[in-house]
Image (tube, rainbow, N blue to C red):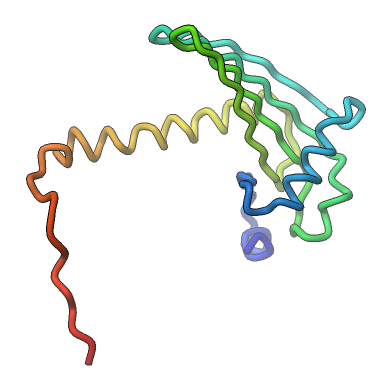
Length: 146
């Protein structure tokens, strides 16, 4: 899949989830070594009674995983420390990327992506009035097979 993206002349930044346990393990190992970090950016945001500290770290030391991912040039780690209603939680997200850039630009791009993702339910709920729909039970019409 990433080979097709690269062949098309496009770039990629792909989130790495738990179902890629070996890739995730290798990325965590890369990011755990301070000498592997090329750039880092930290941002704090206070909004609606919630405080969020986001740190983005970037590494080009991707030799352990490069062979499996076409064009892989950098790995990215995002750590979020969120304090809300007296409770604190820490979240980690990891990405692989064909780009060669810095932590600030990854932070901006990833944040913009999540702003779009979070806006979609609003469009469905408010604009399309999905929450007001009375269709809650039953099944969709079944299409018979020939």
